[in-house]
Length: 167
Image (cartoon, rainbow, N blue to C red; front, side, top):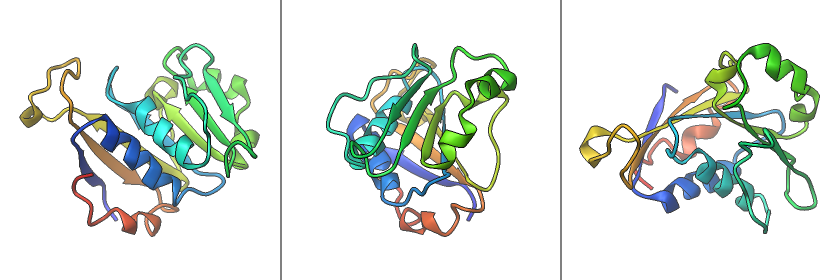
């Protein structure tokens, strides 16, 4: 399956996409979340984390860098990461997330700041404001376009989304 594009008309739809992805995530998965400030990366993560059972607040991990969620609070461990303040891949290695991420799901905001992330277990998700939604360069528009590019481990699982053009 090639990249899949979905129209998200509002923040609620962005959270719903996260909830839909929660139905198909597995231990060892990484979902990279790219897009400018205010594009909805944390909203998408919030939808996924809540769909996995978390009842409390889901803050942006901007200052903590990593916000973990563990069972029984969630069905599957989740590491919600924000790499905005990191500068190199070695910064990511120093965090030592590899072993912990293997047992759950990693949501990685700003993966480009650590040189990007690749592999069969990666679902690369980019959020952007399309020109025809009236957005400007800062994302001042309600709607978004989500582009999902699956690694090999994701291709069969995204069939539940392939007929979806809008949420």
